[in-house]
Image 1 (cartoon, rainbow, N blue to C red):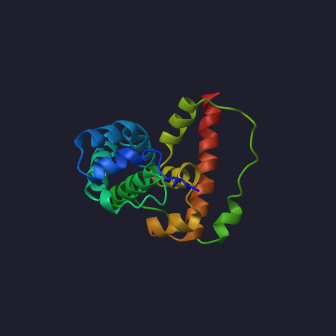
Image 2 (cartoon, rainbow, N blue to C red; image 1 turned 60 degrees about the horizontal axis):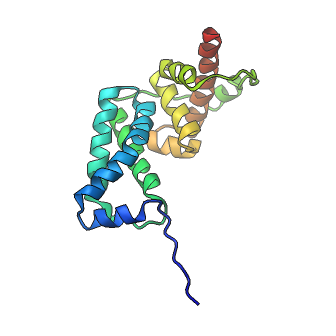
Image 3 (tube, rainbow, N blue to C red; image 1 turned 120 degrees about the horizontal axis):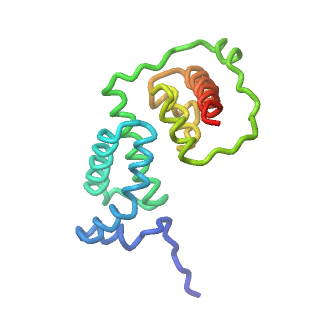
Length: 182
């Protein structure tokens, strides 16, 4: 009986070729992943030039260390972790300030009920872009990157309650911006 070994990466052959130093495989992985990785960085940084820098730095780091990629998850997930970490590092260099709050603030900031309106992606992205940086980063990490508040707190050097409070405030402000768009 022959058992096929399934690899966890959707681009196993390209990754293997990259590990051997194949420039064409590097270019193909870049072509496949550049846009979604740029978008992930842009959601965090909200600055095209910085997101482009992070994108380039992330690909250089990924390709430099591709031999350490063990395929326990997908290449895209591995690369996205690099992009997010580098984006957060770029924020730290900007000395992004997150307002520390105590847990009592969370009870005061209960999320409003969902209004049932649907918005197109462009309208939603424009509203998210208008959020103050701290709110936008936490909202992005929580909603789009599936980080827990504990993970956000660790990455940003804030308390878990601050992450929760800023997330709730971000949702409230986002709702206000979206209502203005109607």
